[in-house]
Amino acid sequence: MSVELPPGDPVHGLPTAHGGSALSGSLRATAEDFVVEEDLGYVPSGAGEHVFITVRKTGRNTHEVARALARLAGVPQVAVGYAGLKDRQAVTTQSFTVHLPGRDIPDFSPLIEASLQVLDVQRHHRKIRRGGLRGNRFVIRINGIGGDRALAEHRLETIRACGVPNYFGSQRFGRDGNNLRQVDDLFHARGRRPNRELRGLLLSAARAHLFNQVLAARVSRGTWRTAGVGDVIMLAGSCRQFAFDPDDNTIPTRIDAMDLHSSGPLCGRPGRSLRPSDEVLVFEQAVLAAWRDWSDGLVRFGLDEDRRALRLVVDGLTWCWADDALELRFGLTAGAYATAVLRELVSVSE
Image (cartoon, rainbow, N blue to C red):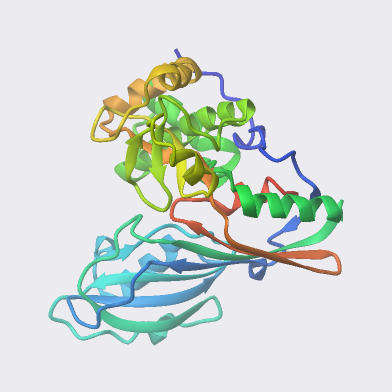
């Protein structure tokens, strides 16, 4: 049975954790208002079959740059590696690898223009893989600020101390959530079957949406940053999982210190990931009962289940006010969304 998907952005109505927006403002009036710097967690090795290229791009998405690199090097696009997709409407620093065994490093200067700068070119021993990064650092400027600045200061302190719900952002779901309508068609064999690349994107959107439903229910309950019997715990900045142990009196302290987080489901077929138990299992099953067709679809298409932290730590958060603007600086782990931070503070128009 097909689910009823509401129109518009599927993230818009998700509950906030800290009381809702204290401010209003506009975001991305120019690309320079949203600056992202990728942190792979390593540097190029200086030797190997791959060419490691670091670029700064403005108003261009990751796929465009990957295609341009492949064309210039005369290789198929599959020979180009990158860790993740970056926004088009932003200034982003990102690294790519191009597999060129036995070949000299090409002249990449023809790529350079106002929207693309080549910052560094070196040899490297392996391809950059999707998801293979430590995180990203952001500098975000919100213009036309209105609202209660004193409340916003308090809200920022709370975000820095407690983190925010680790929602998947609107980007994952396409314009007005269109990816979710397409995945519902896919699961119910309606219309044309998408190609492999699009199918992967749609399946990822489905898992993200189901995770957001569970997280939203825990935010409403006030349990998104606590842990108890039945929870699967995750170590901050890691994929390591373990079951909550009521006899381990260090867990509450480490939860408060944001060293550990409770987790939610990334649905799929049973695999190596731990599963919740007791009341947590019953709770997640109840939240996802209406989405059984989607859960079954993810299993049918061969995705393995996994877990994702419910809480997002906002690392090194600082801010400054300038007339009618607010500038935020912070770092996030890989797979996290800056919009998950912004929605706890400000209602933005883009």
